[in-house]
Length: 427
Image (cartoon, rainbow, N blue to C red):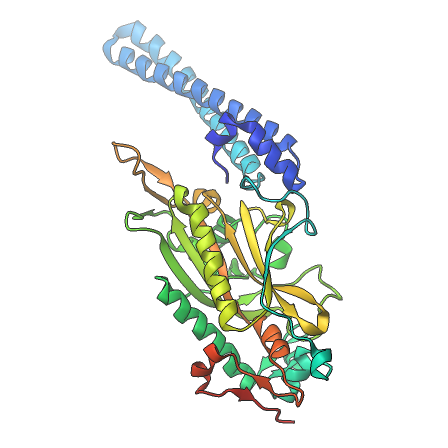
């Protein structure tokens, strides 16, 4: 939820944000009008309640017939106060429902437009020239099957389409990658966390995931719980309803969890291999920080992601995601996309978002305001970023393959694989 004071003070900025996203700027007027109704309704209710209290004092002092008349009048006033209170509550609910439809205000400098309007900030690393090396690269699934690392056929037999098994070298490679990510996070001051993968509706809604993409989320109706698509959700709820201490700097967590996505609307897309699947593992960074520090913290998270990509030895590019592709909670998002040789294109492997105070307002996470002498509270900023996930295996296998079907293990991952330098074919 955005800051309503910001909306009142600078509605044009919010309209511009809506336009940049391709969303309805008219929603700004609807929210402002609802805010006026709420304030007027509350004012009328409070005025009537003050009158009711004054009348009650008069009743306590009156006697005889005058007292009976005042009691009758007080009953009528009590009914009016009750009616006005109900109207005020309704106005508050109306405003809340409308305000929740507003996406976060886009950060200045983010590209306008939709999915294809991103801006490439930089490309890092050298793409291999397989023609010059004299062989045609295999795709990740063929390599995975040669290595005895990926089994999609049995995954489909047991669970259906877009499920898979990681076996042998595949299982070890994923664990190595995720443990390397955890160690990288710890080295930068993050606290590792194994998070729940089922969350309550209010936590899922608080992160902004129950909007237009809610059909991507698995829901357990019998328990009224949601399966998370990222540990960001559970980490966002970790401090919900709390006042956190940020005096020593951001609170940083690295969440490891299984993640589940229905991939609704992706029929026919990326059906081969493990690029777009229903279940995977991920290490996700999450940071609670002061609003003034959010921009710099965002760049730090991006830097940690790039550090991991360097450890994996992957050529990649960084893109500044356009406003219309941000998602409702993000004010700015950067994606890192690894080069996938057999597809001849870059594919997203990490994403980092600055959600400013949008999630913290929904989840009511605050800090003692360092700028107010009386120690008032204010909402904090939240940021998130992927440090490693199962999809990285796609890029690692394809970029580090050799002509005989073996795969070189990136040096940074070798200690997590007992020093193994090459994964050999088993078939």
